[in-house]
Image (tube, rainbow, N blue to C red; front, side, top):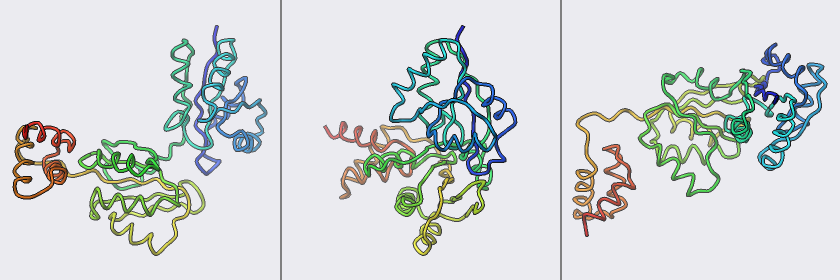
Length: 278
């Protein structure tokens, strides 16, 4: 009979947030798969837990995943932990969970800290519907395409960001979402210097031009206002694009403008307008 993989959430800053159930699970399993064994060893030492550790991270996920799976199929139990937060959320642990599912290995979650949910809770923005977008790509084109796809997103959006990339990210947000869109910038959650700044995107960009970003950030951005009025079909939108082109606009710019006020896909409008021109 195979063992069980436990997804154990670890503190994102305050060690007091590790639950008694998490401590019990880490103490009971046969071994622990950790993102960084050095970081996890400090946590285990604090709680006087002595277990063998294996390294499991994005750069060795394929080989290490097979090693962990083999031990699970042999009947051992394993706890998967990241440096901070919940394993398998925006994390290579999702591949191990998928692998276990494919081989009939039971996976159980030991709940605890999740920076995204904590930030959403204190943001002051709507929490009923939200989308987690994780880290943006460092590739400018991929990054811009990602943000453009969210231009008309009405749900609250959650992003992770490192301090050295915060300024360009805020500049991109202002350009795509507009400087009046609301944002909550949550940094150093659960730590000594925890802070949440609630303002507009324009105000945030201005503030961080004058102040150096410090600590890891979770950015919670308000969604777009829902479109009102009658829905516009793709065919009608394409006709609007061509009317703007006839008035002197470039096709690309016209497609973007119509997309902004109709909620239709810019790429689909562009393609439909090209087809009509033929």
